Image (cartoon, rainbow, N blue to C red):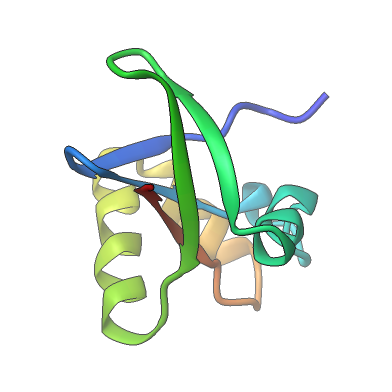
Amino acid sequence: MSPPVMGLREDPDTWLIAASKAGAPDNPAWFHNLRAHADAEIETPDDGTVEVRAEVLSGAARDAAWEKFKAEAPGFGEYEARTTRVIPVVALRRR
């Protein structure tokens, strides 16, 4: 069983998720699935089921989002220290 994915709400229509896989050397399977099929549904405590489109962030947008994860949960910094890969951050935007 995979651990739950932590999401950060960036604004009313955008959620961020990090493909940290606890600092493993490879990306989690769900990340590859979202890259192949960007349209998905998520379930949130506040909005119920929401249709979204996934976008893998890059450059400064990725770095700023990643800093939010580390500020929210210091364990993300530990994951980053465990791996040589750049941990992807995905924005899930309401469709």
